[in-house]
Length: 124
Image 1 (cartoon, rainbow, N blue to C red):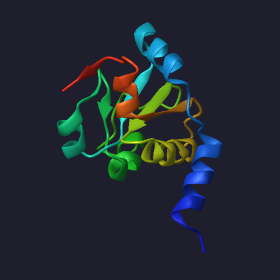
Image 2: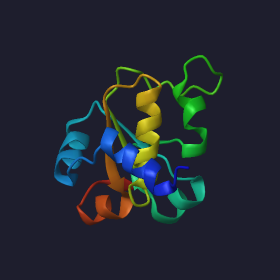
Image 3: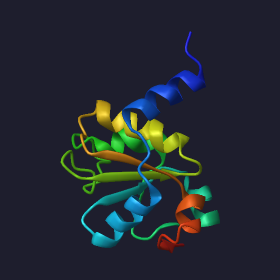
Image 4: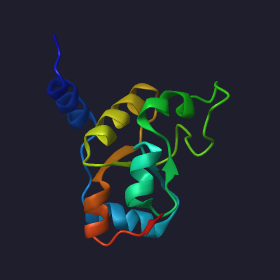
């Protein structure tokens, strides 16, 4: 029987965290897709990465699948995708899901608090 820790370890092994400095530099360069996988209440409370797509983890499979009516056009299989959540766990799990769906260039930024502390640009 698997535990939450087992799932998280597997996700972190497949989608390791990128350094905050690298993630912020990549954001500044433009062209990558940043995705906040927290629910709307969490995003409303703390804000999110400037320009980030807002796709709750529970809806990710639908938004990432171009065969559904809910597809988010920013989520293309060849896009460079950076995921953020509250602390990094949901982003890792979401990243593993995207990898399983055929997205090759997926990165875990970690938590929004770290992003803000590191000086990454935010929006409400």
